[in-house]
Image (cartoon, rainbow, N blue to C red; front, top):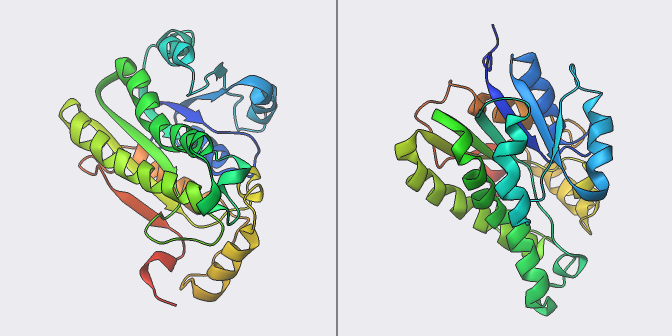
Length: 255
């Protein structure tokens, strides 16, 4: 019996089969979970096609985490497939081009606010939208990139990730009494569609090539996905507000 046997899990952010979210969905199914994917707009059909590459094709619901209408409709859309949820994977992040690539000092507030809304505040809005679907316990897991230092070219997305980390701690504090755990997985660089859109992404690869105590493969999303699946399970019943680093150890060592 798998560690997610009988669990119902919503997975956001599945765009390609190279994404961490895809591998979370795949492993979750293999561990016994019923998985629902979410997507929206022009990429909805892409997610539907990618769903067919999972061990079992998963239903796809429409959800734009910046849309109050979609957030309000989430429980109804989930209940078209299952009565509740036991876990949610938050794999959502976006920053406009002007907020990345070494343009930190010149980025205007509208673009900064977009990055913060989509990449950080959405953890709170998604969790609250799913809250009525949770039973006596639930696990929310977000995908992160270490925000303790200033990375080359990452700019306002780095600020957004710092906000995501803080948001997860406050959610853990306030939702813990309801049995809801909130944790993050800070993964090393993976060559996903999102990563490829970051100017200078190859500089991240160079850092990991030279500094990771454990050899890091930028094409292998499974180590991070395994950590997320473990956190979605009951194997971490008293862990919340935590950031699990799956980065080959780079966060722990100096230059």
